[in-house]
Length: 428
Figure (cartoon, rainbow, N blue to C red):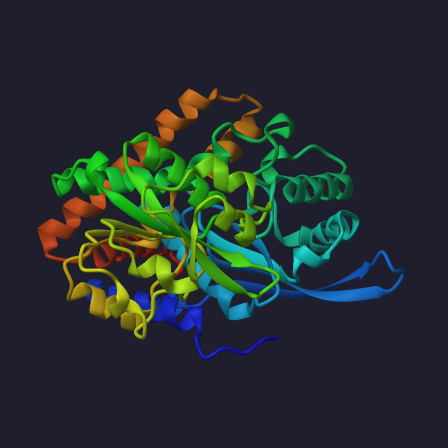
């Protein structure tokens, strides 16, 4: 497994420790909540298209399920580690808690690069993942969902394998499914839209009109695209996006000072969000280094890629014009960078609040699947807006009343809810 100097689980634990200090949690509760309740490590043998068998490493980590069944994504990534999965499962616990939905937190994945796997090999990998963990997941225990480099088709293969093994229909086993196969309207847009709903509320508090703002976005996957789409509909203008280039194994930023054309960029991007740099330049985009998105003279920054992107080394590159940073990705800001940001005038909307729209809509999908009754898109978006707005206002009000940063306020609210559930159950 690839080693890295950055450990996301240590970051997640440090963030929890700070919240625990603010809440003055007892030692038993601290010990219980700063580590996952359960972990599963397994291997997945796959017969590849060339006739050889390749063995992949898979994981599922269930951090906490005191408030309801565990909920969390499955990511396919070549640089994945168990500590990344642990961190994501913990962050999901706080995310479902701050959104006040009756779910816990989990995460899973496979160490692989789907760019280099055929459709047939990806299907075998999905089915193999389910076969290895089928006894420990389910609609009333742990509900998976898509994450980085997994999609609706992957979820459907996993659902089918789960139902084949158990011999019954369980559409609520997994979320992020195709709409025609039990998925929810609005699920694809939910995370990105949720980010912009929180941006909208922050702009209201700062008395700034959206149409007078510029934004820069890291990433061009599902979250980023839908965030850009809703932000444009609100009247804002995105002038820079970044994306990962699979051929060069690095990221690039694509800048157009009079505003990017979302549909134009989507037409030259692959399914994983990689933008064709040659075609982009032909369309008038300036090709810049990967971190250039962070340095733009804009009002809003939206990191919507992966963790560990805003660090102690690059945080000082953020332009002084920036007023809001909405964390669309999980854990994009390191602990050290966050300390420096607290000293600035930038209004931070923390990740597990800003990107909670995805898990909120996943919860909606689970509810619809379990009762076999589905809502139309307007109803889903109305419920999503109400949940996201309520969560944002709760955190903002608590932040002001207790003179805490938005991140600290969100952590105190979410950790306290989970700790109380554990106490009420008699676990600690």
